[in-house]
Image (cartoon, rainbow, N blue to C red):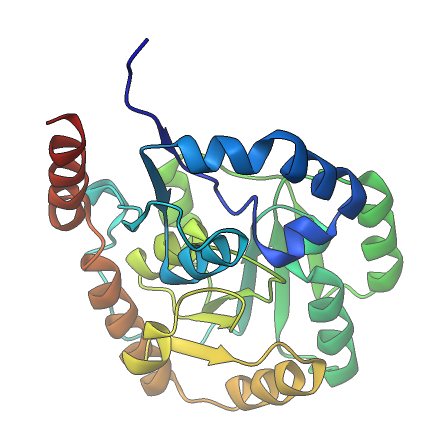
Length: 261
C-alpha cells in the first residue's frame, strides 16, 4: 500500500527478553522477524541502550532514538522538605523481569524494622506471585497492593513515599521511573535501565545489578537524613522536566516529517 512503516519494539529484542522462550524466538527471528525489521522505514528506540541491542541483530537497521514524554499533569509542583516517612515503593508489573525476588530477599536480610516496602502492580504470573508471597511470609513490613493507573491517584500515592525502587533485569526506558521523578520521588534502579542521568543529576541511585550492591545501597539509603531526600527529590523533578511532552514532541514531529517527504 506504499505506506511508511515505523516499528517500536518496546524492548522485545532486549537480551533478557530474547532469552525467555529462547528457541521459539530464535526461530521467529530467523523465519520472518529480521526481514520485517530490515524492511521497516524506521525503528523507533526509546533509548540508546535499546538501539545498541537492536543493532547487534543487524547493524544496517534504520534506527532512531526518541525518548518517551510525560504529561504536564504528572508533575508535582508542591515539593517540600518533610520528615522521612521511611517508606519505599515498587510500582511496576509483578514479573520475573522486574527483579522483585532479589529486592524482597535483600529487604528481609537487612531487617530494618523502621522501613517498609509497598509493592504495587498487576500480577502477570501467578506462580511467581505465590513464590514472592512465600518469601515475604508474615513480614508485615512488605505489602502487596493492586495497581493504580490514574495519573492523579499516582501522584497522591507517590507523595507518601521517600523513594521508588526498580531492580529490573531489563528495561529499555521504564516509564515508571520518569513518572516517579516527575512526582519528586528519587529512584533506586540499576544498569539494566538507561537512566544513568539519575546518577549525574543526583536524582536517586543508579547501581550495578547484584544482590550485594542492592543490599549495600539500601542500607545507605536507610541512614540518610531528610535533607538528602529533599535534594534528590528536587533533582528528580528537574530531570523529569526534560522529558515533558513540550520538550520531546518536536523530535517526534521532525522525525515523522522527514519520513513522509
